[in-house]
Image 1 (tube, rainbow, N blue to C red):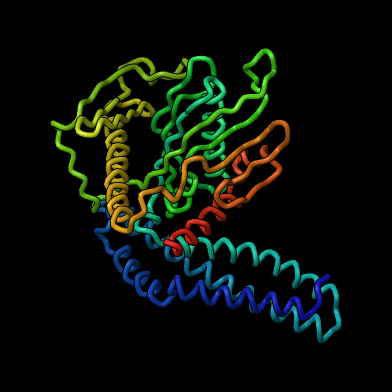
Image 2: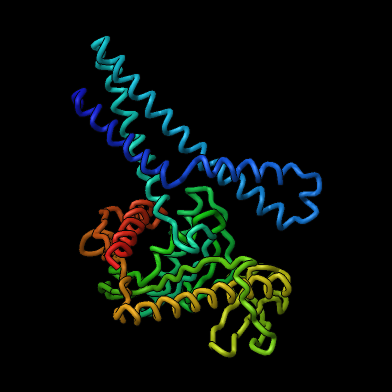
Amino acid sequence: MATVDDLRARLDNLNQTMSSIEAVIDVPSKQVVIAELEQQAAAPDLWSDQENAQAVTSKLSRLQADVEKVTTLCGHLDDVGILIDLGVEADDEETLAEAETSLATLTDEIGSLEVRTLLNGEYDEREALITIRSEAGGVDAADFAEMLLRMYLRWADRHGYSVEVYDTSYAEEAGIKSATFQVKCPFAYGTLSVEQGTHRLVRISPFDNQGRRQTSFAGVEVLPVTEEQDHIDIPDKDIRIDVFHSSGPGGQSVNTTDSAVRITHLPTGLVVSCQNEKSQLQNKAAAMRVLQSRLLERAREEKEAQMRQLKGDGGNSWGSQMRSYVLHPYQMVKDLRTDFETGNPSAVFDGDLDGFIDAGIRWRRQQDSVD
């Protein structure tokens, strides 16, 4: 068991970290906004505009949760201080052991909250639109892309986040060519944007009858979901809309009509499709949201490229290949940017990604500081 001095030192460090977090989160200003939103939410005609009502209630709920989280953690830190004092006064090792256990839990919780305070980019608060594509590696790459799709869906499920899959293009033999889905929670984009890049899998191929080792690749694209204020104007003359039968495992009613929609943005050549909904109109609306997000990201990248050129930096600080998943001859998943790694690929593929994501967010902040 840790010494009393060690327990007090750890508690002091956590209190200092919480003070920094409180300064960033700025609880008093959030409480002012909460009071304003509560007034709006109490208006009798709030739900006459459902979209605005949902925005108000969602923001109110998120800010209340943020303030409650900070208040609760500060209270728990005070409780641990009292436990340590009681343990010392009564010379009670059991009480001190309880304090040590509480400190370990609080270290994890405060660490996660600290990472959240690093999400202050222009679009970080938004929901995320994710596309996974199989790349080099044939059928193994398609299978790997499907493994990544399941990984992110399991990660979202672990956290209780809602997900909507817009489009899945199945490969002929196994796996998927691509899939696009939206993660619906605040800060999904800021959190998951560190997952963007090329993912690499090394394993004995289950599709090779000679049992040879195969390296395959899949790409992950993460975009912020567009909002009304983005003002992305897409004239009708700039798009071509095609309808077709939805593809995938048989039996779904979506396969019985030409309900799937493909939209081509003629000026850029961007192509998006959606086949998740039964209605052609719903699929068109979803596809337009995806197209708007891609155009928003394209504009942001062009702006960043101009800034890099002005600063004399023509390279991409993110790089391309960002994570390796090795299943043979040893078991390891390693992030090539942060060096964060684990020897349990099964847990990672089952959605245990928080360690990689937190390390990626901290790494990104360090890169921004260097720039």
